[in-house]
Length: 309
Image (cartoon, rainbow, N blue to C red; front, side, top):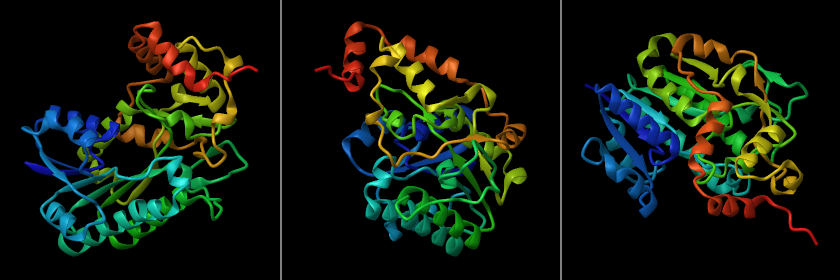
């Protein structure tokens, strides 16, 4: 039975990856995340079916013991935006140094292990065009802490490892009542997004097709049915909660957000892995089903409605 380790396992993608791997019935799964009550609560339901390890990915001795016998490491741990662009020290410690630590351990102790790295489509920076490919040259400034750390992590992976795949992941549509992704991107940008279920399934499919994607970098997008603009996505999501676009206050969205584009080449990964089952429309339908009462609508509305004087 192949052994898979997941960092950042208590996050939305991590939990979904665990579910998909368990459904395959052919993997020994180890989940790694920081020790706190929230992470334990999300992972405890799986504790009889997987191995749970709580610790810091930058802790060398902890990660050495975790990785030495793994066949695959799905590395999801990282700082989310907007925090990633606010706290440079934290971002460097987790996104770069944490990844550097994992790479060093694989290189020294377990070079046959495959690293599946969750990078970010934000690494392209401020481009003049609306579409990018993996060969597009990044255009970042010194304040883009989040994206710079991701790029540096990519570089050390390529330099040190023989077995890896880098996935540049765009804005991920998750449960709006629990996640803050709506604050991470520029409302004026064109964007190709992906849903949490599709990107999670992608990692599982990647293990099955690892020989075809090894030592490559991919843009992960949801395709034609997941293309929109930040403004329209905001409007579509908020309408679910009975909030019309005239109430949207774009000042809520910070300036240093997630760079987003359409991907000319995202279909290449779909052709290999065939992981897409979702769209923005189906995502919005799921949100509608979750809205069960006006009380929830009003709670969400308070986050977005501009108070009139």
